[in-house]
Image (cartoon, rainbow over all chains, first blue to last red; front, side, top):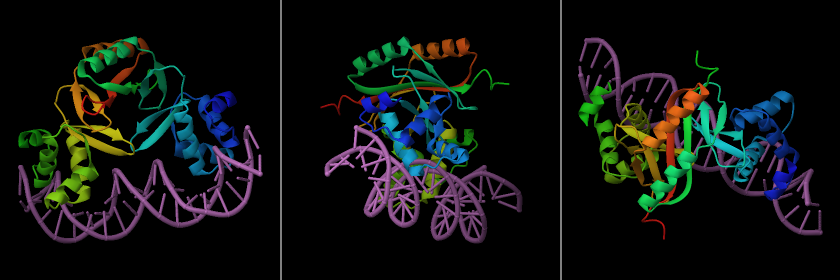
Length: 133
Length: 133
DNA sequence: GTTGTTGCAAAGAATTTGCAACATA
DNA sequence: TATGTTGCAAATTCTTTGCAACAAC
């Protein structure tokens, strides 16, 4: 955990570690406000803006994925390898997906359109096995 | 244009038509603020909140696609059939893509994970042929 | 010791809401 | 006429910023 921070050129601070620790064990995505609420609840005191800054830097470092959730940004701990997502809109669980097919598609499209690809996303939304009644 | 509104159960108002008209002829995505600025520039007077409400209702009606652009929502006129996007981050042009492969992938994933799919997105971002130097 | 980080309060920006006037059907 | 829609201003909500105190290296 600390190693990853150092490799990303980020200092190892109590606050960043706390944010990472909070997200590390869960599979659902949390917003900055969510994370901050968790801290308050536990009695940990961390500034809200610090949470915003931590999430941003951790995402840039590739340790977190981010999702748009109706006007706010939500974050989830993620693996370093490229992947796509299966997102449950009910419980916010996010499962990572590997998809060679999608990569091939992206390659084909970019070539056909003379397009310089900098990123792509392929996410599936709905209700997970637990949430669909 | 008016027919589509009626079919969606929306009243045909000067404001909604103006919003549609503005987006209809362009291939880039505009935010509510952008659309409103266009109106001001042309001397058309429409309330900003009306623009927000119009864009939302038109999107729900399936006439517009929406994209997240760094904290704000951007909209683009779109075809009724399902499609994906090739988005230029430089000029905001959005090209629609058909991709049977992606549909197959979604079907396979949902089956394998016992997941009830309600939506999916597959978008490619980068610089279009015109914008890459 | 340097320099990146934090925390707070204030500022910013996008978006939503209440409600009376109004337009559409 | 009945009901959806508009416009305005105020209120919300998420997020960012300035800056002095502080912690990491």
